[in-house]
Image 1 (cartoon, helix red, strand yellow):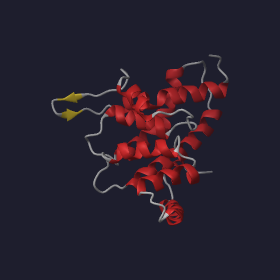
Image 2 (cartoon, rainbow, N blue to C red):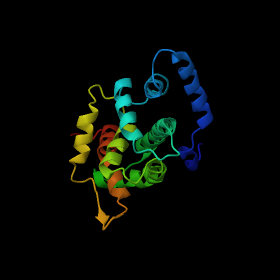
Image 3 (cartoon, one colour):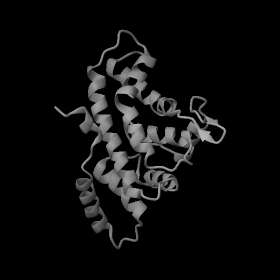
Image 4 (cartoon, rainbow, N blue to C red):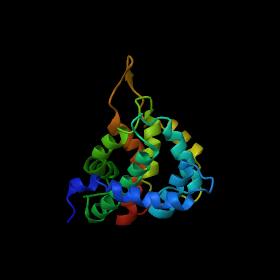
Length: 202
């Protein structure tokens, strides 16, 4: 059985080798790196809503990447998130709660699976990234399936206007609100997943 800590590990070299194959195939087709990564994520990793949406997402978050982080680092974290999702779904199927208590379910799975990943994800970005942008990204990279009509601009607006998404400062210092941000980005996904598994009526 996979050790729990292995959940957060990915074989970077294997994925990068796979990416290089895609890059070599598309070389000379006038596709820039963002387009190649976006296509690789969809075609080879089944990650993201669509190539076009992935391009928008990568371009948007690239401006927040730390100097020592690359677009491929960002893409690999998206892949890692999907690995975590697969393991989380296995536990969700096996875990039973005494009643239909959505808050208990959400808090249990956030503390069990996503708090550690939150630190890994945040390490990609500069401090200038806002909490609603991280909340929006969490929902994207942990999405259960490709959305047919995903519109990135509408998705960002939804998170920007979500009163549950925090942006708290004390003076110029940012207060740690990461648990609230995780809840803002993942609560609907976890609730929907759990209700579909235990067949709770709407």
